Image (cartoon, rainbow, N blue to C red; front, side, top):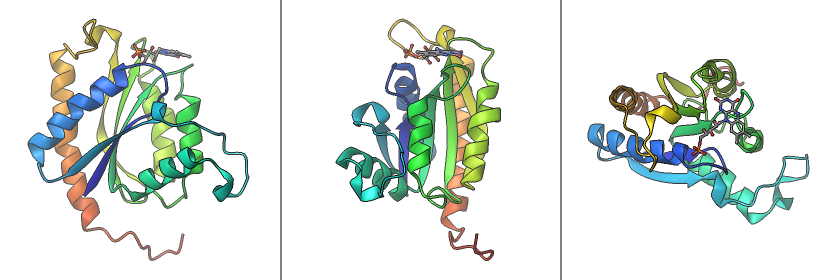
Length: 187
Ligand SMILES: Cc1cc2nc3c(=O)[nH]c(=O)nc-3n(C[C@H](O)[C@H](O)[C@H](O)COP(=O)(O)O)c2cc1C
């Protein structure tokens, strides 16, 4: 299975640092998953504005293709203005409603404060539920105090939660593999 570690921001380094750590933990539980990283910062973004898809730039075509071809995701987002970054929402807006269907996803989020962890529950999970993704019950929220000055995660509790999330994610990958993506209900 192709697993994509998605860094959902064009500013900041902590989400990328968390993904590096998650990659190691996933490999502990399943060394056979094909893991790659996708950083939104590497793309020249355009807004979804209703034009035919073939009129977007090559970066947007590559972004959508890479996301749609993956079989599972770890999605990392910073918290911006009590929400997710606009560039991440815009990326979701590009996707076909069936693009993430029954694919496993785990979320990691980083904010400047503790107070915004419910952004994951109240804003990100509903989007992924719309896509009918297999969102793991575990997600990990971090903030600045969990990192050292080089953005290395120094909080042991965060490490344990990331490992547990990786353990459950790998099981969701197995479930997804056995779950046909075609539906009975035609929706
Ligand atoms: C435009 C902007 C808005 C932000 N809004 C919030 C916010 O509402 N709540 C919060 O906890 N952190 C907020 N932050 C802090 C970011 O979540 C935090 O800087 C980022 O996750 C840390 O990444 P970095 O240290 O790698 O830059 C905001 C940061 C920016 C740039």
